[in-house]
Length: 333
Ligand SMILES: Cc1ncc(COP(=O)(O)O)c(C=O)c1O
Image (cartoon, rainbow, N blue to C red; front, side, top):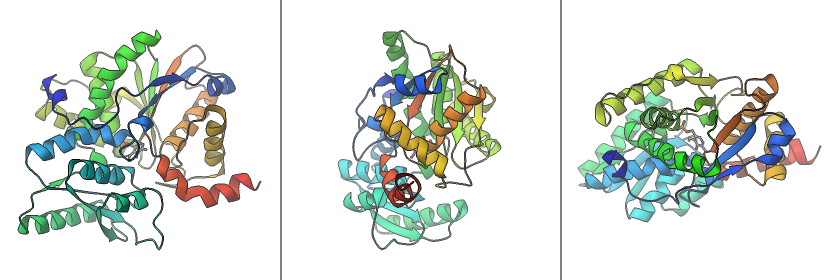
């Protein structure tokens, strides 16, 4: 596993695994545990930093001077990339979908604090993102600065090494706690986290079943992304890696109309988690996924007597831009 050592240490690892006894009792279902990847750091927080430990190592190895990436205006990945670049003394250029807000909020505010240069791109699709990233990279090259382009969510084989490493980290934690979760659950977007977990499960013989709650895409496109990343991992790092997306259970009933969309039930649940467990979740990723998990416990997809590990992938700064909606929908009712 020499390849797992080719990382720059940026995250506070290992992140804790903790029991969520109050919400477990409230739902009267399986024992729920949480892996606190929201505690990987402050600015450099969440799941993205695990991926960026490998992407940044690859950039430094190639002597690149600027990290370029893209995402939504509240992208956690973009913010984590900006923080990592600042820490490593690299430049950072972000392409963010949408128009420039009058007042920067949440992650976007932090992008600016970390000194990232931002190109705002209203009405952009995935192909548009790629074209713009290529154009910006070319521009840096022409100025003699070697760029390193990190794809959306750092969800490529290099980035997903971060979650293979996370599986390696978790197994002794489970031993210490005397548990072996029947299920591991996470939110999924660009699927790099999930792909790393799947590859790690296969490489380290983790018996837990993988479950993913989609925050935006239908299950077939998530399976395509996972299989593409697994293929890349096999080609570049682990010849003989033998796993595929059919081993994952994907839930797509909680997307709630699309990326960043939410509703009163999800927001109330996020509030409940905060007040029962002191754990903050955001409406775009972890709150959506944990809400889905709670519903699926009620539906019987996860049973009493089983144990579930939920990976908290971070995203707390994405909660703040929803404060007016939360005020209207929750506090004033
Ligand atoms: C807080 C949070 N959780 C989960 C995810 C999903 O991770 P992935 O894109 O690897 O599926 C993201 C991605 O941006 C995220 O920011």
